[in-house]
Image (cartoon, rainbow, N blue to C red):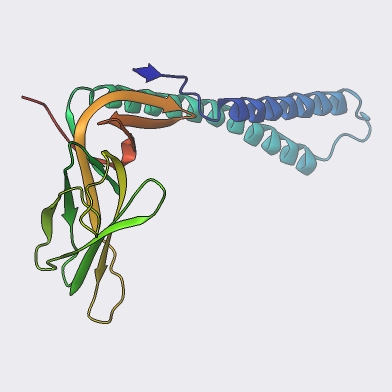
Length: 218
């Protein structure tokens, strides 16, 4: 399991906070100098002084809120990491535009939006070449296509990862949203990189946000 630093954007945030703090210090120095050197016979205008104090207060609040926001984001990222680790060793299903051909076969779960009149599933190889197109029953809103691993010419293809695209058309011949394919396998590894959490599921990288269900293996 590879869990790296979760400080996504930490460098940028630190630089921004440092800049804000520098501005705060500069403002404080200028205001103090102005108060020390004002003419007793002609003191600083009260309205201007009040406006500067308001700016002072706003700047102070920005610095405080920035620190609190960083703490909140760090807590959220830590919680996501802990949740991701909890997936290890469990069966994960994710919304995914791919499948994995193993021992010459692959089961591809799918979901079709209601109202579709024509549905087709396209399968492409690692080079992006179309190898198979299969028509599906639009009345079956949820199902599983059992791919025999053969291309359109009946040639058995090599095991590996293949891209899958599900297209549902309405009565006007327009594509419909909500057509999805899914990938199910055991979560083996958690990878955190630049703040993004990815699960290795059945040897394939799956973004954590694409996971839709988790089940404990018997």
